[in-house]
Image (tube, rainbow, N blue to C red):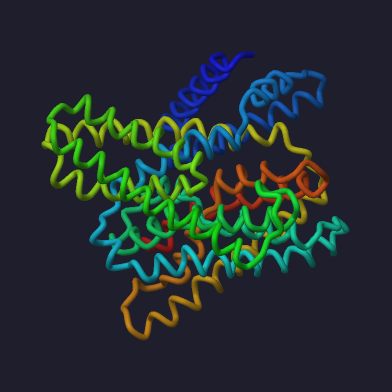
Length: 411
């Protein structure tokens, strides 16, 4: 099966599942697609056990898709830009300190809490996973996924300040998490750089990735902003934003700076300054419609892929049990990493009621965690961590995603 056939199959499944969900299941789109594709995967596995090897066809489809490349080097740039495009910069400025702390200190502290806790849990299950790999697991499972979070927020009608906190943190923390992941991967001896890891090299990598991503996002975003302001043709203007997203993301990767942070910064600039000063009403309307459609299509494909991914995992029952134990532990780490900074800031700032519980339960994990797990070196630790990550992600999207509305809007 070639790439075009694979894409055709995925887009057809996404369309069919979207129809079934909208017509019959009536769950939020991302959750509905995940549930339906997951049920299909389990049905195919069940049929395979009965002598109908239909799952082999689905596995052949998935083998054509490199999930990590498809998300991290393809879909992620467009999804992050579409999300950042509608985040108010003024609202984000009001919440900047909380967003900054949660996206940096929160991710790093959660990484170490989850990492050390998982080391003892995995030892208890006899998995024997080295501590450095446990810390890698902590780094890939700690960030909240902007794709999953923004998809759910659309249906909640949450207060604007709360939406800004959750969306702002989730848009930025995956970039920080990737930097932490790369540092730990280097320590594990499988990173992109063969030089020994030191405090100075960690700081240089952080500055290069994070600060470089912000700087490049501002520069490229401003250039495109000036180009948008100089014309009034919505087809060309939409094409300029496409070039910014995909061309800029590819260039950021080539320069070894954070593509996710770049595209979020550029999206915030275009969505705020560009929308206000460089676009006509007609362009704004067409731009919003275009990126909303891109967002919906890519989200549909992504969550179908997550649901189908179960077909290619090695589901040892021990891995599943370990994953189930890690669910409350990752939530506890999230509660602590959110609760401490919010409690300190409460002395100087008023927050939404139940803000700590909402941020804890609303911190959904998603495709980014799975994509990072897939980059781990081949071996027994990789297989175990991939399944454990999958278990935590599925719980997060389905259970937390379906119940967060009760916290946000209890009536």
